Amino acid sequence: MTLSSWTIDPVHSSVEFSLDYMGFSTYRTGFRALEGSLQFDAARPAASSVTASIPVASVDVTNDRLMSRLMDADLLGGNEHPTITFRSTRVEAVEPAHWKVTGDLTIHGGARPVVLDTRYLGQANHPFSKKIAAAFRAETAIDRRDFGVTWNAAMDTGAAYLGERVQISLAIMAVRQDP
Image (cartoon, rainbow, N blue to C red; front, side, top):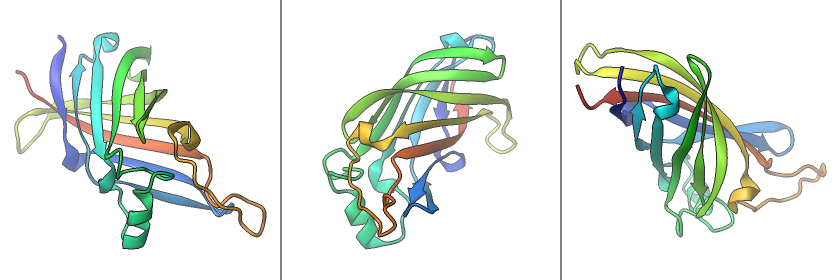
């Protein structure tokens, strides 16, 4: 196999995140939009790379007041920094279908290195588009404060309103662009 070009399929991909909420619950949501591209060869993962971007305003919340608040500078900061980006810097094979994808994650205008624990799930011809599709799952955790997402409040129990550790989970489908 050779290195080929792929485009992330935003309809069949998802980016979700969760964090502790009120000290005794978990808040889970995600983003409705995602775009990106891969240079990919399953036989040579170290030669592979990925870039992706997510519009902050695509965060999946149904409450207008919360959406407005999330755009403020001390939360997701979408008013000043409308896009979250990831650009890989290295792909390391742990096993043939288990990789560590290291890259720079930019949230709130600040870039920090992260490692995506990634599983390559395989590929097949899509029955409708007739194009080759590949699937991946990836996870990482970040400290939101490292990215300037600093707002918090104390609960009457003494717990923090929002947890600092954010779990990020991706389900990615990509479509091959070259023959």
